[in-house]
Length: 420
Image 1 (cartoon, rainbow, N blue to C red):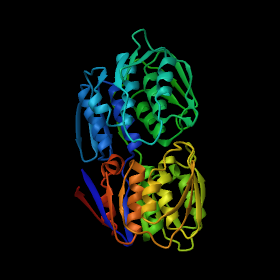
Image 2 (spheres, rainbow, N blue to C red):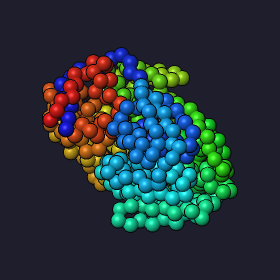
Image 3 (cartoon, rainbow, N blue to C red):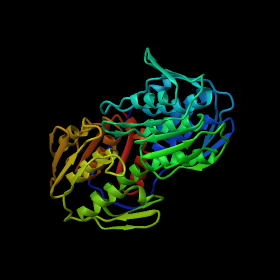
Image 4 (cartoon, rainbow, N blue to C red):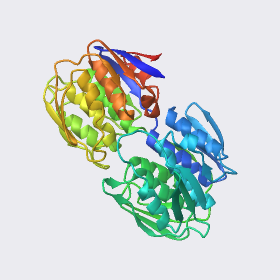
C-alpha cells in the first residue's frame, strides 16, 4: 500500500493539462460491448478504475488494447456474466449491465463495490431495465437480467429521492438503443458525461435526442457499428486544480478544459472574489487574500457537484471568512472533516451542513483518505499546511485522478509517493 508525503507551504505556479473524464470513460468503454466492430476511445485517463473496466471487458471476452490514453476494443464474442472479483472493486462496473442486456438479452453482474460514502442503491437501474420488459432478479449478491423475450421501448422515470441517477440513465440508454420501438427517459440525468456517452452511441448508429436534458428520447435500432470517440475533459479534476490555484498559487492555468461544464463551480469562485480569465478551453485563476466566504448546497447537475464538496471544504479553510456547505446528494459524505480538523481546520459539522471558519494556518499531520474526492481535498490542505503531512490510503486518489502527484510536483508542490 502507498501513501503520499507532502511538505507544505509551497506556492504553485504554471499550467496543468486536464485529463479525460473518468465518469465519461467508464460507461463509454462499457458501451463498446454493444457492437462486434472495433471501437477506438481516445483520452481515456490512466486510472485504477479505467484499468478495472478494461479488465472486465477482457474477462467478458472482448479484445482490448491500450496505449497512451487510447483504448481499442473489439467485442466480437462476449459472454453475459461479469465476475465478482473485478466488479466488487468498482461501483461503476454496474454500467456493463445495460450493454450486456441490450446486445445479449441477458446479463449477470455482481452487486458492485467502490467508495463508502453512504447508500448508493442500484434500484433505479433495475427499475429502468424492467421498464424495457426485462425480468430482473437479485440473488446471492448477483443481479440477473433476462430479456430473451425482447426489449421493448417504454416511458421510464429515473428520478430518485436525491435526484436522477447518472449510471442508471447510462444503463437504460445503452439497453434502449437496441430495444424495439421508442424509449423515453423522464427524469434523466443531465450531466455532461451522459451527453458524452450519447454522442458516442450516436456515432455507433444509435438514434438519441435530448441527452444533456432531463428528457431523453431513444429510437431503437437493430444493430450498432464501430466508432471512434474522444472523451470530454474531466470537470472534477479541473475543479480540484481551480481550488488549488485559489488556495496557494501565484496564478495557475488549466489547459484542455470545458468551462461550459463547470458553471456552478466557476460562479462560486467568482463570488468569492478569485480573479479568473476564462477562454474556450483554458481557465487561469489567481489568488485573492481578501476572498469572501461562500454558502453552497450540492445539487444534481447543473447545480454544484457533490464531487467538489470536499475540495471546497479545503478551500474554505484557506479563506479568512466563514463558509457553509450543505450536502444533499450524499449526506454522509463528510468523512474528510475529521481528518482536516487534525490539521487544525475549524469546521463545525451539524448533520449534512458544515460551517467552516478559515484559519491562519493549517499544520501537517498524519491523515487517512476515506474516499476519492476526500483524498484530493486532503492533498490540497496538506500543500497549504505548514510542515509534513502523510496521506494514507493513496489508492483512493488513483481511482479518479491521473498522476495527481506528478502534476502537483510539476506545479511546484513537494509531494512524494512512497510505500507504507
